[in-house]
Image (tube, rainbow over all chains, first blue to last red):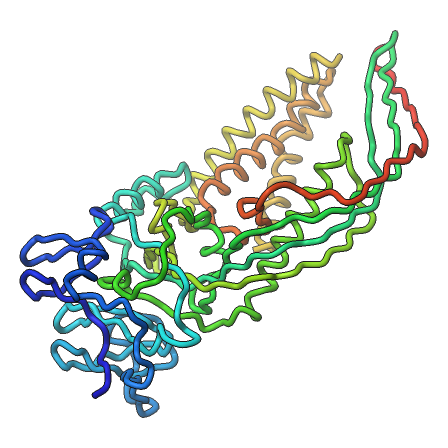
Length: 364
Length: 92
């Protein structure tokens, strides 16, 4: 018999278990009991063995045009169909969805075929920020000087989802060599003149910088800049992957492989290496004429990191916000009130005029 | 986006010139010129800072957070080339 989608049952009452970000453990919403992963393993609710790949239930392909949207709210152009192991309902979802919640019975559904073999993550950082804190953080985040007055957080949020996003973690080193000019500058005043002396040096630095777990998201459905911006994640909370942590959240498996995502990590690694080499040259200014670099990746790992994603609409325009599900860092581009921008700019202009006239008078 | 920014900057410069050109013409001191130059600068800086506060999505360009250990420097060179000196008159 095929292994249906994974779910976890409360050892006390048999109801569905969800990961509680607030308590940092598994929570039964029916009997109120809480369990650590070790408790569940001891009770036999979680089996500490790899999923048998030969018995995994696979997604059912659907006829083109049969569905126009997913049932679980995931964004997709490529639908597949699963059957909820609790109520038997059809779950229409994206091909890369690894975990979801059945909209009919509310139970957590983990698609085992999306987390085995090549898709099996090495690590996961469990959620630490609970859902009821997301809205209060969003309200706090949206309090910016240019945010329109009628931007009501409660009203504009169309959808809020706790999603595990797939990340590639690159570890390795970068050998770099810079050549250029180092300049030291000295300024002094004598009589009616200000003197500036510049000493130029021909410089070279050659060195290696080691990197550990540089993250790059492996999902084409999330904006790269958004996922970059919610960094950093604190790796001290990162644990070996167990599907149980996905329970109660959505999860995506990667749809962009490590090779495809590598240039993004490489660019960051090489920029940092160049900066480290420049900083090692103790000059006032370093003018790099030539930079040679060679990045070597020694290990690539695959992890799932927690995020809260918010989709909003304001004045018929779509806005997307994301929150780091571990640290609570919020990012996104807020709408801007033009009248406020003009008003504040005018005030700034008047301030600039006053300051400009003071400086001009003083310089005379 | 870039065009809109150019349009706004152009409009600001034109408005500034229209408002302050008569002032410059009648100015008998540098303070008016300072005020004229200060206005667009102040407006632009204020606007840019406030807009950047509302825009927090940026592509990551560095990996500073993930550096393990310190830079292992294999080789270096520092050869003196030349010295240049310049002087600027600051008082009459």
